[in-house]
Length: 422
Image (cartoon, rainbow, N blue to C red; front, side, top):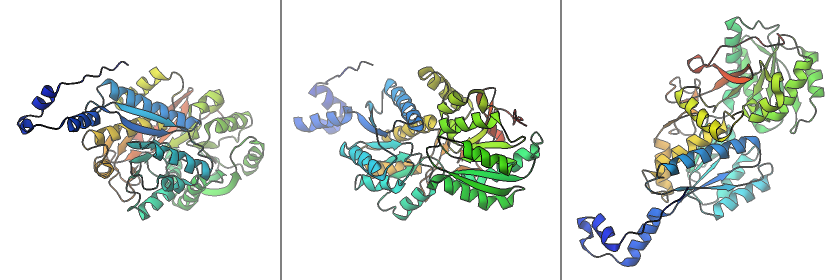
């Protein structure tokens, strides 16, 4: 894209200022004002070289390009600045986010850090540019809320992970009541990675199961990275539960599990994959072994008119399997910031934070209403039953090689099908 820089004459500037400009202005004042009005708005995106973060960077880039092509924000272009970061060590997170602060951006966006999450906030120090992430983490929200006088600039644009656990038994009851799937038994076998995120999900599943017709069979612990699913397969075959929950987050490795499972399945068992199937690598690696698998996300791209338009635009830029979580989350985040930048001074971080908090946004991933103590999007239906105020947790099933929303019914693209190993 070619940009033309127009330098107005002093006479034009004074005329544009109206009657109030009758008193001559000093030349340096005018120059500074014009520079402020034309310099780019700088948006820092922290994205590591992993699937979800690539999705996030792509979604943010799509939004920035759209806004800039339409004239930018009140005539100012948005400059996206990508920062790579080691998100798998506390030291790496600290170094990465401090490096971002050193560049003094107008706002910061990121998908998530998988561990030591409060380190991310602490690394910002006294720098208060708005920070919007999709960290999906109750501990981080609790930490920020308890220290709101220091972290008033932090927002989580999706609900926390606890709702994965609280919704799962309800989902099982609903599918079982539909009659397509007749559970061989009501046992639930949880395959759990030993990090805070996945352990929190499992904890909530265990706590919520008594409210359903299902019960816990056992929990099998695993560790990242999962390079050998053999022992897990042995445990699954031994337990013979009617429900198998893969409480993990790496799509390519969950795809490898699917390949091993369908080669020697537990007949009739519903297999639920927590989140990781959203990553493009899942379908690319699993191939036909993904057919019938079920998964969900609390920040997925809807299949309504708005969501489908986004998918179409994204696919035109990035052909192939589309990531259905952080692509839309990053896209929505840029537009949330754009709305704030359009109404308040981008350099006034407190005004920015106040605007973001008090102005809900309906995006491709649903409604983002941050005006609550956690400054996080609300979960539909557990935090709000109004779809216009919450972000719906979407349940997908792989059908004919594609991800199809099957719940909630109001947003569904199709109905639950029986799976090949039934």
